[in-house]
Length: 347
Image 1: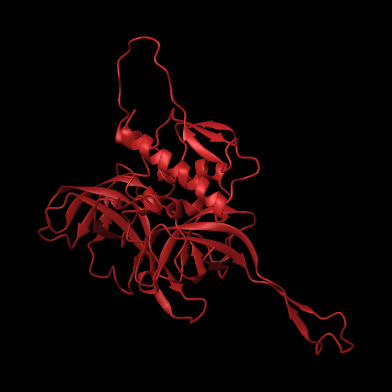
Image 2: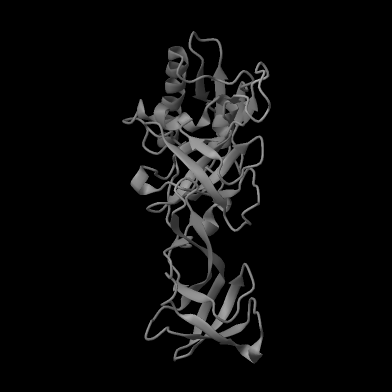
C-alpha cells in the first residue's frame, strides 16, 4: 500500500484522538466501528461519519504537517477502524495479511477520493461566472445562424463576427445575465454570465463559421463567445476562516430572484478575495431571526416593543470559486431552503 496513504491516515487518526482528548473536536455518537471506503465517496462524507464538524480536517492535518504529504490520497477499498478501547479514541487503517503470492498493484492518483463530488462544481470552474458591466460588449458575437434558425443546439452552425485572427478553435458561448447586487449596500458587484454551451470554429473569416458542440441552453443571434480555458484544479480542503467572517447570499446561480435552493445548489455571496474569502472556506448558513411583539406589553400591537429572535443556523456551504467582490459556494448541508439575503458566518 502506498506509504503516503498509510502515513496520512495514521497521522490523521492520531490527531483525531488528540483533538477529542482536548475537547476541540468531537466524534459523532453513532460513529461506526469500521468503514470501507467506496468508489463515489468524498472526504466530506467520510469525515461526516466520524466527526461532528467535518470541515475541521485542516486543523487536524496542521498538527502533523511533516507526516501528511497529501491528505487527499485515500482510495476505495481502504478500511478505517475506530478504536474505542483506548483512553483517547483513534482511527486506524486496517492492515491486511497476504496468504498467497499475488500481483502488487498501486492505485492511480486519479482514483483518490476527492474532497467533494467533482461533478457538483466542474461546470462552474472554467466559466467566467462574473463579468463587469458591458464586459461582453467587445467579445465575438453570433450574427446569424444556419438557415436563419431562431435557436440552435448541438450540431447547429452559427456565423461569428469579431474573431479576427484568433487561432483558438474552442469557444464557450455566453449571454449577459442578471446583476449581482449586494443586499447590504445595494451596490452592483458584477453581472452573472449565463453559460449557454461550447462551439468549435470550422472555418476562419469574418464572419467565421462555428459548429455548436454542446448546449446547456438555446443559442441564438447576439450571444457572445469567450475562448475556452482549462478548469482550475483545487483540492478544496475544507477549513473555517481564521477570524469571524460574515456574508450574505446574493442569489442562486441561474435561478430566479424568488427561487430557493438546497444541498448541491450553487449560491453567490457578497464577499470575495478582497474581503479575505478563499477557496475551501466553510461558512454556516443562518436565517435572520424575526421580530416578535412582547406579549407582556400593555400597548397596542402597533406601538408595543418588539423582541428580536435569534438567527437560526440551518446549513453549511463550501467556497469553491472566488472573485474580487463575489464568491461562489456549494451548499453542503441544509435543513431548510436556502434563499437570497440569508446570512453566512464562520461556523
